[in-house]
Image 1 (cartoon, rainbow, N blue to C red):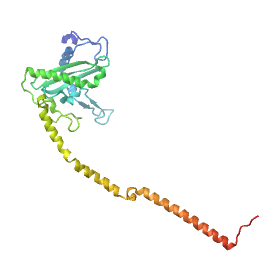
Image 2 (image 1 turned 135 degrees about the vertical axis):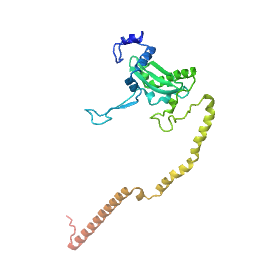
Image 3 (image 1 turned 90 degrees about the horizontal axis):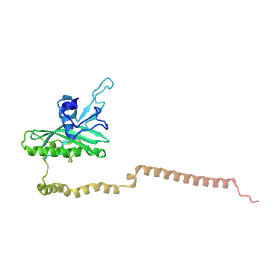
Image 4 (image 1 turned 120 degrees about the vertical axis):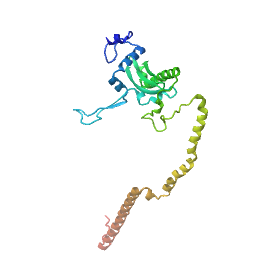
Length: 270
């Protein structure tokens, strides 16, 4: 069996998909060994390093992109969360795994600025914390790369994960591509500069307030008809109707009295 060929003495699987089975067991070290073996296959490397995949048209779908799938390894799209100071140059790819019983985890390959390749395996993150998988894995990957760099602090690979701006990061919220990591001793100086830059827009605040209130003052000076043209027209029409009815009633009463006088009609008492 392949497990025996790879020398995995602490692993046992009952199915090839990894779904829950009481007879499954393995270790983080042996998961890393399996991952290292899989890296020799080109298809495996392509899949784990692809953030998204658009399916092309086929015999059932007439257009490209009829389905899109996203890699569950969020470090592919937002590797900057690992941090610049650990000298991680690239996140190549990883394999995630999640079940309610075992929880969630990831085995991931990163490349350090010193050129070393590091396979990091994180297991046993509780299932109810699966949404935070990326943060847990990033913390371990960060520590692994930092120790790797400290053991051989020589730049051999250009770039750093902080150079990768997150696709979904709002403007001004994600990485800028600059090495902006602040060491504890530099916090006060950096804070002073940031405060000065943020204070500039405050000076223009009164002018903006004056400009914004001008339209409000003009609205107050408008007549009722200008402010509510439809309502004004309705009120005018109703007023004309009332005046017309009153006038018609008054004229009818006056004409009725004139007829009675001409015809000599008078009231008879019994």
